[in-house]
Length: 66
Image 1 (cartoon, rainbow, N blue to C red):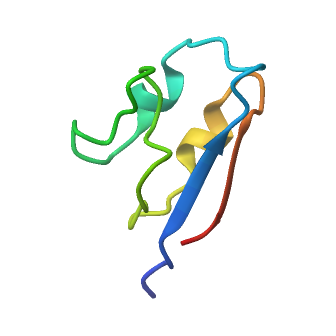
Image 2 (cartoon, rainbow, N blue to C red):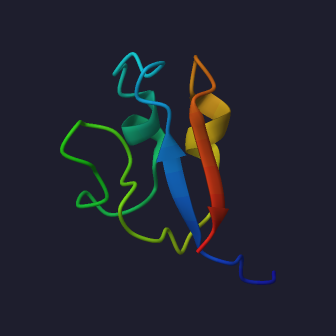
């Protein structure tokens, strides 16, 4: 399976309800959490599975290539 390109995530903070779903489903190591208990938005995600985007109940997580 080809390796996915790393991505940087963005969270629409005005829409985020801090439900923790993105953190709960994230396969990254435990340190991949922001100070706001969401997935990290300040460093590249090398897994780029995008599960967090899919599970977000308010669809406020987006990404761009790192």
